[in-house]
Length: 236
Figure 1 (cartoon, rainbow, N blue to C red):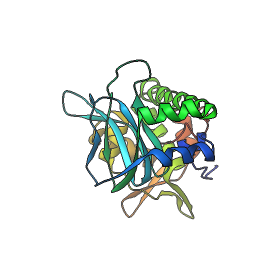
Figure 2 (cartoon, helix red, strand yellow):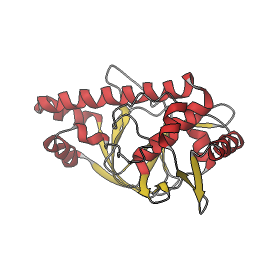
Figure 3 (cartoon, helix red, strand yellow):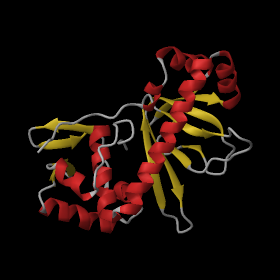
């Protein structure tokens, strides 16, 4: 079985080094504490956010209080939504899951930079296409192959984002609880508990000091009908 970890690519690498530096010149840096909201669903979508350090989750809350987490972003990721074609509000909420230092980019500043740098406009279009493609693939994983497929896909994405090869299998450098996994696949903690126990029985995963260890990555790929998406897409 192939247990080699291929790490996901940060989405800011879509921009050339020169264009990424342009963002640094116009951003305003803010600190956010763990648990602090960066923006709420329904706020005016007028800013993008560049993570200088820390981690952020982007999620949508249902009427019953449950959260569906779409993304986790970390250092050197760019996230947010912009009103490119008229007024627009954020469709998700963003919250710091670790203490963060974040560069805030105002829409007007980005527009001025693109007017002055045509190649930045090209890079920015690529970034928007990437973000759209990522969201589409994530929805495919959630809808087409049931909760088991969604969980298997999420574990694979975790491997690419936070996996570390060890003699015992692939361990994660960031710990995610079963409740975190449930929010990533739109399920409950109890259901995730049962599915993980089934994967353990099948030899696909194990536990070390309470944390998941991936033992058979190919088995997980079979469950979710893995299409070997590019690493900039197959990430948490």
